[in-house]
Image 1: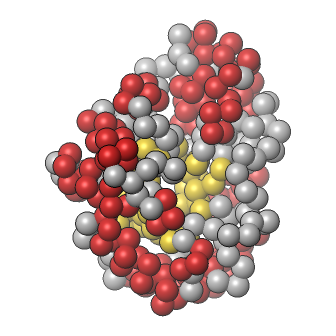
Image 2 (image 1 turned 135 degrees about the vertical axis):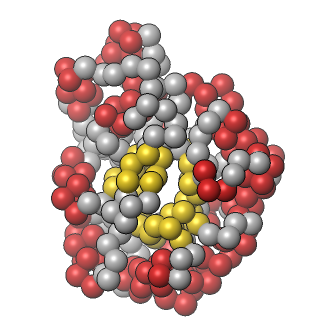
Length: 275
């Protein structure tokens, strides 16, 4: 993990950058275009969006304007809950592809485990994968029991599970399960929507390395082999977030951060959501 191009190798051999930009709650139009362009200019290669963010068009425009060769990029999007099911997921994928203005997607995820629907949706993702419209497929917000259920019938194993993960919710059991299954864990909301930036213990560790609390958390992700996608719309913050390849947290500091876990979510519980 030496720089923004450093990548993990997924189960099927596809390389996925360890670090990327998330665009959740970033406005379509100028805000998302500038955010993505700033990230690409800073050397980011991975951009994570979703149909429900309603900013795929802006992401696509930024990619086009930035002029980075397509094969250097890793673009993720997700099928939304109301589009789950076989036919509707295929259709939703085509819509996302069109909005992004791309010929293929690098990673396509089921956004949430909608009861009674996610298995059919997974079949659609398997079809898209076999048709080479996506380079990798995976899930988001899946607990262990959702994964076990999916794996009973899946022809192709999910390559990624993107979940809420940060020092207050370190997902140790889920990480262990995914590791055994060779499913790459990815963290959304790695900074707990900014809540952790004023955490005293993290600030103390950060001071030791002359880094920010955010940089320490993102470094903790990498050292735990967690793909991470912090969101920012400010260019200086996008650059600062990625400045984590020139230091290493000691085993003692890693343990201290692990000890902050409270199993506390800032987002919905995948066993109890109503959208």
